[in-house]
Length: 221
Ligand SMILES: Nc1nc2c(c(=O)[nH]1)N[C@H]1C(S)=C(S)[C@@H](COP(=O)(O)O)O[C@H]1N2
Ligand SMILES: [Mo]
Image 1 (cartoon, helix red, strand yellow):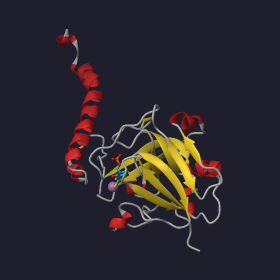
Image 2 (cartoon, rainbow, N blue to C red):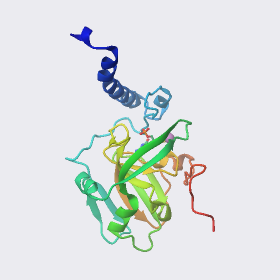
Image 3 (spheres, rainbow, N blue to C red):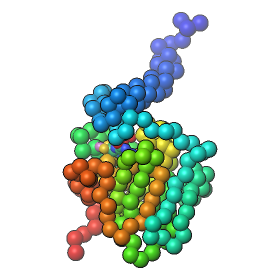
Image 4 (cartoon, rainbow, N blue to C red):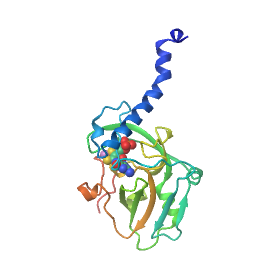
């Protein structure tokens, strides 16, 4: 029976499993090395797995929640279904990590961060946004002006599929015009603050503004 399958059909049948195997292997390796050395392993998808902690709980429709608070008029909690019911935007952009790897033309899809901020109503003196993650460790931030760009998403899909656990699913941030460290995985909290609070890597020397060269930045005044 197996002998009757052409080589091509076999490859087609096994490729998705191989891909998932890689993701699991990378995730497993990072339980041992949570700080990014696993990023040196080859990965056919082009992406490398990053986590600053060894193990991250899995969340799905049964237990995922995104809370929005801080300097807002209406504190909110969104389930996955709530986020899926909002208008979806697809952004295709090059992903670049400061470690030197890149994956061009990667589609992300989800809710504009700006829509979520409008929903909650930013109030004075809110000028920045802080992101927290259900890995319990990673944080990120943006100015309010940056956060309102239409190419910054609370993403539910990556490469036109639901975001996998390894890539920060079910919900991650996607900040298209900046280095990928700004795109917090396993997003669980959005808080409007009165000043930019440096994120996890920014406390360790990374630039707070992660603009990519050639990103369409606001003109200097
Ligand atoms: N929660 C969390 N988000 C994170 C990180 C992380 O370690 N934890 N790493 C950042 C960095 S440096 C990169 S390059 C990307 C990697 O995303 P990937 O694992 O989907 O390739 O996630 C960013 N967001
Ligand atoms: Mo990165």
